[in-house]
Length: 203
Image (cartoon, rainbow, N blue to C red; front, top):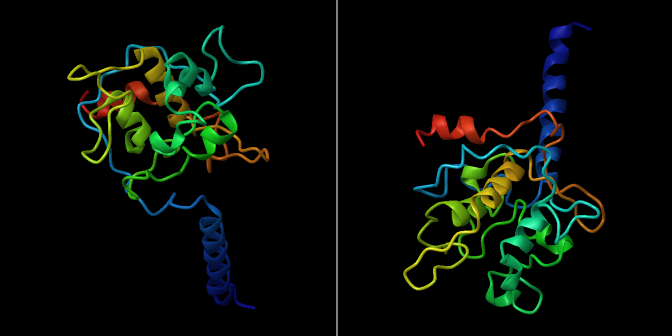
C-alpha cells in the first residue's frame, strides 16, 4: 500500500492517543490560564536551588533539616491553620497530613477562582501557592500567611524558594495509592529555573 495513504490513519491514531492522554490528566490541569498569577514577587534568585524536592520523603519531619515540602509546612507554621480540625475555615486545604495535602494542591483549582490552579507543575509563576507566599496574589485570593493587621507576614525566604523549586521540578508527590500526582514523566532532567526565570521576567 502506498505510504501516503497510510498517513491519515497514522495521524488519526496519534491524535486519538493524545486525546486519551489529555483526558487522563488531573481535572482542571488544561482548562486554566498559564499566565503569572502574582505580581511584585520577591526576588529569590540569591538562594541556592534545592534539587530533587519531593512532597514527602520517608523519615523526614521536624526536628531536623528541611528535606521536603511537608517539612516546609511544618517549619513555616502552615499546619497551624491548615489542619484536619480547621480545613473548612482555611480554604479546604489540609496540610498536616501529607497524603491529603498533595492531593488538594497539585493541579487543583482554587475554591475562590476556578481559573487558578493551586500548583501547576513546572510553572511556579502560574501557581496560586507561589503567588500567595511570595508575591501579591490576585484580588480574589489572600496572602499566605494572612497579614497581621497591616503588617505583611512571610515564611522564611529559604522555605519559599524550596516551594518554588518543588513546583519548577514537577511538583513531585504521590497520593495514598502510590500514584504520582504530577504529569511530568522525566523529572530528574528538569532543573529549577528560578534564577533564569527571574532574569527573564526582569526581577
